[in-house]
Length: 532
Image (cartoon, rainbow, N blue to C red; front, side):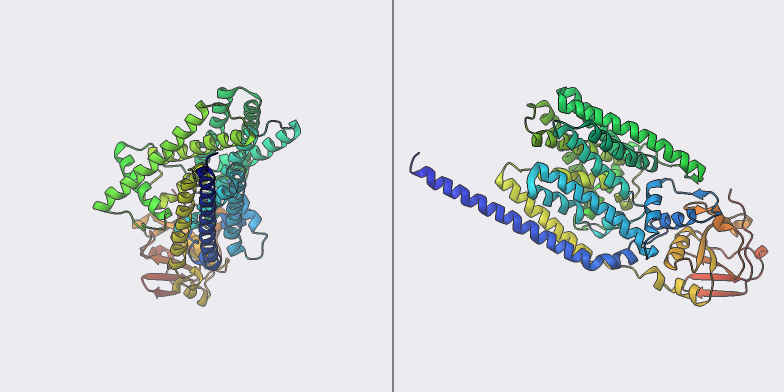
């Protein structure tokens, strides 16, 4: 050893300690900033930002299913059976108005903890912190999806569960048959319910899980890959049985879904979807964008969308090179390879579904990109982990993202609670307990008043659009049975019920004006025209 070598070793040790300190401090500050903001803002956020007739329909329908005479329950074009099950469990908690959102977010948080635990086995505590912080530190728009009872949150948690199982099956050299069977059965049952509930989960969850088993099984043909293949097959068999049982129960209830309007996208639509992808990326990264840009901003957002596509391709290339390289020798290396392949396939399938179909219409399509967000959270800890500078850059970048998203959450202007809007206060003050309104007014008012004002969704039809028909979306036919008066019709110029009711319904007792909203109050129920 030359005299210079000890000096270099000491300097290298100091640099490593400095790098570790920078990472620890950065991640700690980012986590503290976001968690403090989340604790402060989440209660108001659940009450004021989340509720809409879409997001809270699952709790209302779950409540209807628990009562006799509910009739046929009509869902949206997303079946959401797992959302109904989760909401049914939440109904047993004290505050039914908020329990569904709180339980939904708790399920999502459990999924994130499992993701962090999986990454910790592969990339240590630093990797776990990065994965947890990226997936947890959401902007307000993303947080709405993560707390919405109809936001496919069970599918997201299930996605993490499949990733964990693929990693565990390939990473462990030996599994006892009983343990393997129990794990496959448990994961398969919940996977089947989510597969029946959400077609997108089949694409972004089940296909990557199957692909991971096939790729690693065909490449290595050893004991771990055989275990992975057997476990994959067992999960899929259990999932198929669970999905069929779920569909059979849904028919017996009966639950009926709407036709799904999704179709393959044209080239022009793909270009527009790239624009939306870039815009939604800005929504996720500190809430930089709130609307789709025009003019020069269009090119910037399309460019950001192309960068996201490039990142997904890079993840796939990395996974392919890793599979084609040397056989992994250690448990950690095998688990890391399965983790890399699974989440790279998740990113690919979600991006492909987003770009190649008509799912994306505007920035609200962010709810279809949550699997891609989780994939980046799962893969980012593996980036630059063998280089000190790379680890520092990733840690500081993640901390900056958490800080930016904390600021976005802290400064977002929340709407007034539904309970405090003039329309709801007027309905309650006048003693109206039964009303008809447009879909976007109906369910959310029923939820906000805890059923004190029972508002049912209708649409204009017949007689020049002045007759009313039940709108059977996120509704039960039992809701439209005749009830004693007084009964109100809410005419809201913002939505689809905009004309005064037909004179054939009789003369209203009184007419109440609330801004641009008109409430027609009758002393009897209205005979609705059957839905076409």
